[in-house]
Length: 495
Image 1 (tube, rainbow, N blue to C red):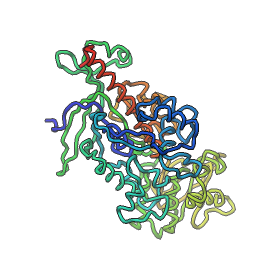
Image 2 (cartoon, rainbow, N blue to C red; image 1 turned 180 degrees about the vertical axis):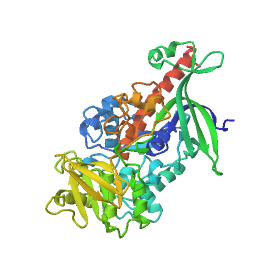
Image 3 (cartoon, one colour; image 1 turned 135 degrees about the vertical axis):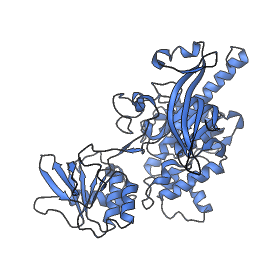
């Protein structure tokens, strides 16, 4: 028997991280306007904003406002919203937002946000000892300054970067402070999101050829019930209560941390091989690896791998650090981080460059890097085989290994694991290599009407930029809602 959570919602969001929270905030009727005293440092953008000062940003032409803006996102609305909230942030300025927010309850769009855990999503599962990459104020959501929240907790913000657990608590508090609780459900696990149509006789059935029908469905004899969402809620006693929901629109805000990427090599499933920073960090904090003579192997050249290096290095555990790229590769993330703001990551990068392996020196006592190397296999006796770009192989005895080479979203609840939504439908969805293909101004999936994607799924990993997805989706749904009401008023038969 289905759980009591059963019904129809205009919009439903999968996951309750910052993307889903911000989208709920805006669909609850909060609207951004240009502040009366604000002057944006970008004179061209400011003149555009002045042209429609009486309108909220949601009601303006986002393509027109975004034109000519540049930033660290490939999505133009993300860049627009970021430059409104944090003008000239990439130039080191800390200008206040040029927006102020009004709660306009008549703009409320019914919606539900489903998450596996409390509001904040993956932030509740991150390694607690590492500082965030972004500044604390870049983590904040509209209407509640992060510094103000920290002050209310009687904690001083001594540095611009903060602990993940503080960010997680901020997001959880934000939902309550903004009155969004009624839209959120926790401990929800989705197993199926499928297209449906409802026949006039009331029976439901899958739309088997969406691609062929998507242009005709508006005019068809069917009354649309676009999506059926099935899953279960984990209740207090540990049992599962199934649920079934219908929604006109679904927004995917799952992030990309669900499924750590694997090397796909022999022995990778041995218990001494970890694939996430929380797992590896837990092993170190329990003292499981302390005092071992054999080094740990860290695989990867990103910030998560750097976190693992620091975690082991600071615990006096010797490290072998293997990565495929050259240390001079301009695409390495370390080259994009200012040294003064990120000294610990530049410490790792310095070691990567200066403490590399050579046949003369062998392994160094605390850290040795292996640029342009990859792992061939892991063995049951806790040995690994590394191979250089020239083909030379080396064997090392390990105490543990951490393969930290990225992750993939879990879209198993969609047909084809969601691959058909990507720019390359033959490959899994990834943040960098193959994000979900969307309309750049509405965030609606190109391959699936009434399905939206935002955040890391569309290439925006930083909280600064994922808020733009909330703006794009809100404008799209608000525009459609206006058209729907207009049709009803005119008697065009839309129900």
